[in-house]
Image (cartoon, rainbow, N blue to C red; front, side, top):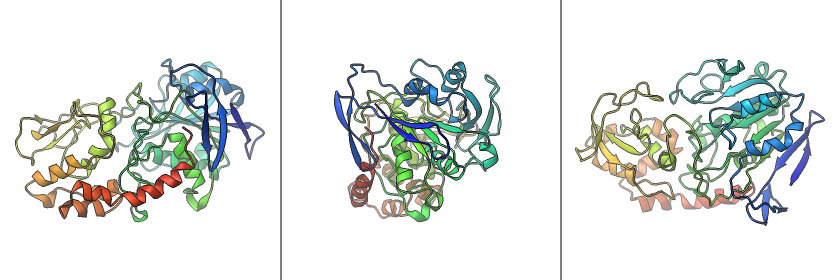
Length: 403
């Protein structure tokens, strides 16, 4: 079923495709509820990019911009850019987030503008000093498509790029089409809510560490809650996934970024990423990124590793130094934000004054978490301090859920 809207600045139809898994279901669009019939018997999850095929007529003879990277692929393995070019869609510019268009750059590495060697299309980086597309970079673009695979964590910067892209589209009167993808951590809503004074590129909005939304749902929340500058709203449409609900497990077909190599790392990412604000390594410079942790300052143990430069970590923390810690490659899948490893590492570090650094507060979105750990709060006590804010967030979130 297709719900049709009208673009404010063109005669082109805007569209939102909304699918659900059962024979019939209730799908939420803002506060309204629509009864959606879905008679398909197929079980394969189809992303928004797969469902774009049915609506190519809306892109014909239009100049298109695309925000994407290596994750922007169809279920048959074809990249969205290549598919659209094969369908004679006019792509004017590719915009690339952190890690670049091909997804090979280090976290935080400056990405330069250039051309894609395979297609010859111009690439503009949306990282570093140019996080928000400039008017001159959007000139001539009639529709902007956003297709990035998120992993459901507040500090994973693809949703920060989404914010700035939506803001630029709103300010330049350009319709934005978000192609939705499943959130591999889509059934987890957990962690401290970001406090407004700690807004940064690794925390743009007052949400928990794990928000439990797809990127399409999140775009609707940004718009609906008027989080863009000056309360502007983007002319937004979402093409949703088919045969998907958030209780399903979802294995990503490609790495979303260089240091998330598999399902285990993606599942543990939010819990272990707090170590990036400490003197503990999360395995950058190994082949077990975000599945191990350790440092030269933790007690000697049966598990150790030595980080060395590799793809996505040209100069990893503790490069060439022996680190002791814990191997979580076989750990049971987590269903919440886990603090046990962070608290354990803090307690086992001899010089605790050097454990945390200033980045930790940005990741946590609050000073309270560090203070609680330093004061000896238990994980149960820390988690209890989140619950009221989490329940309030879930009420707001409910308005924007599609699945």
